[in-house]
Amino acid sequence: MSILTLLVLLAAAATVVSLVSGISSMAYGGEIGHRNSAQWMVLRVAFQAAALLLIVMALLTH
Image (tube, rainbow, N blue to C red; front, side, top):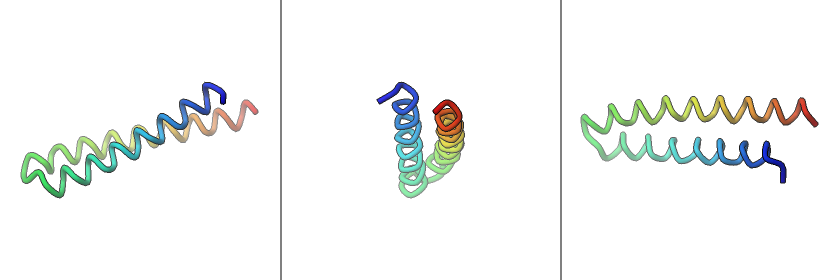
């Protein structure tokens, strides 16, 4: 497994973790949870973008 593959997997895992954290924060956190949920969702988008860029890099280099 190449380092690029590992980075893609880590970015995908971080996306899933931030998605689950954002949903659970929104569901159980009340007012503060909704603010935290928005922050988690911003992180989710950032992790998704990183994963997409890494996948494109992997496709272009192989």
